[in-house]
Image (cartoon, rainbow over all chains, first blue to last red; front, side, top):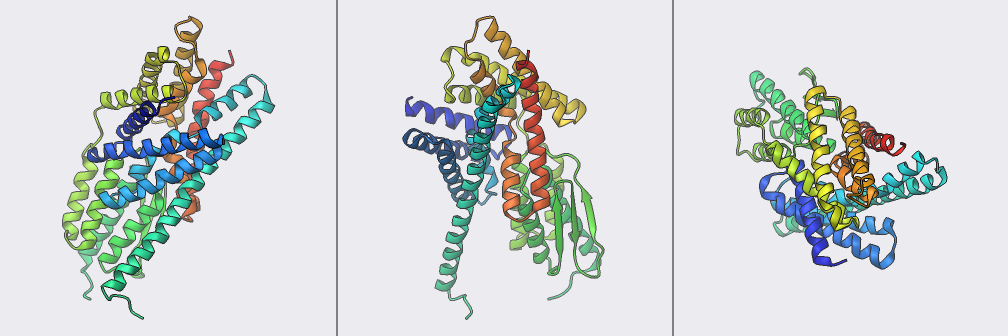
Length: 155
Length: 251
């Protein structure tokens, strides 16, 4: 598949979700960019390693980092940027296939799909949390450095 | 530092609870609501305050001598613009740019204004999102108009039923049911080829992505009650969507 088309489509999709969730008007383009970066990282990872779980982890990690940086820049809650980017990584097709197999009375296949969907959503959650912890560590260190520079630390 | 007077303490309590209620109704994370309320309280010299936020109610205890207050949260939707606005008001209050009265008036205005996009723009956005996801998930270009159309239709149905009944699960069930029927009709009459991708693309605007993310972040921040109840809400929504599709597929 061609990359510019995927980039454009994921940008449009994330922006459209921004409209549905009513993010502030001036952040809509940033929301689209977050969604685009998350989806492209996910696709690149998926095409090289062929593992949807790791790819979802990487995508969610990148989405969360970019959303944190944008939140600092706009001085707005981080959730505004991360939501639109996370949506493409939600394992909708796996969950759908699991349900379809259940309806067709093929429970073994259904369990396989369902556990894969569980693994992917767990990976997305872990990606979010890892990024959050890393950003917290980074900004704590940065804040301490600024305080030291201004002579505000008391020891 | 001077203690603030009795009337302004009541005003401060009203102000914090209003901020918390609007944020919680608009889909903010629990820990952000608690953090905002505590920061506002500290800026008003209420150092020893505690608050406990759940998705259905907020308790706030200002100090030992003042009574604890409680607000109930009845309806929750997603309106991130309000979260951002309340956030900026609370930042201004903490930084000292706003007095308590100014902040309270501003929040009342935010509470009463409707910041949502026009409903047709939202429907168009849902349709665009469905179409984009349909292609991203490997759909056929020939079927794109159907994904576009069904995504918008599902969104219209869910929103209409929500206005009429306020029962979210029912609305989502009917929405995905109609999407499933329309998609299988189009495929069986030969206009479209790929049933699975068509359905997945069209139900994308209904997926509870915000709830899942919020539930995980709340759980990780140690707010187990909010995390579990939001997780239950997300699970019920996903179950309703799944059941709506499953009913169609089983025929």
